[in-house]
Length: 327
Image 1 (cartoon, helix red, strand yellow):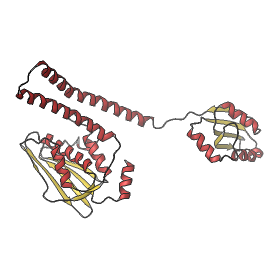
Image 2 (image 1 turned 180 degrees about the vertical axis):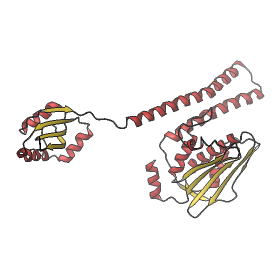
Image 3 (image 1 turned 90 degrees about the horizontal axis):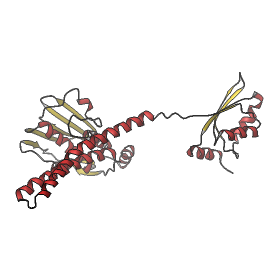
């Protein structure tokens, strides 16, 4: 014996079309129809979703799942009803706008990425052509040309990693780590100009975190600070330890962020740079939220900017599971 609820669920999963049917039914015949619906297992493949009855006009409207209109008519003949009207129901997708916006964003990201990759690829192409045109390269020329190639490749890698960090599903690896190590490893990935002083924290603090992901955040914030300073200045990184949380701050003495731009800087695809995907800070925000933390920024034009990260020091197994699942 087939279970009625199981069959209905199975038909919904298969995407069976929905129809609306209307007939005139005397009140004395309602019990028969309700009984038929409650035992609705038949060869016509019909499943009644909803029924509406107007006692004044003695009209009944039914919403049904069925393979086609003919099956509905045959079904009602079988139960002793004349079907006066049958029409398919067109589903309205309420998520069209959301999907359109997502597709628009993906299109904009693809266009921006293509634009940003064109320049380093041109550098690589031109440099290789120059090297091929010279049968013998002096050591000084090799240093210059290989330097150009390396910088162009690093730029491409950075652009692609920005996109991947933002769009790919996060695989978080939470462990108790020394935050100072994450800072030092982030600094190893960055070319630091000689005239920019970076002041590191003097205290040592442990925190349950994904160190690799935290390195991405710190490297991004430090690179942004270097670009904001534009030549000469100071970057200070501090760690404030509290019983339950850790506060990490990255401050610079750069030009600051204009007040009208400040609320937008964590938005995906927003950037004021000529080169960049606009995903760096959006990815940072996503990573920190996956840690159950918060990231914020304060800035004053002409005086510099401070990014603040609050991380919970402990992350239980259950909390880690829920954080990963929600992202």
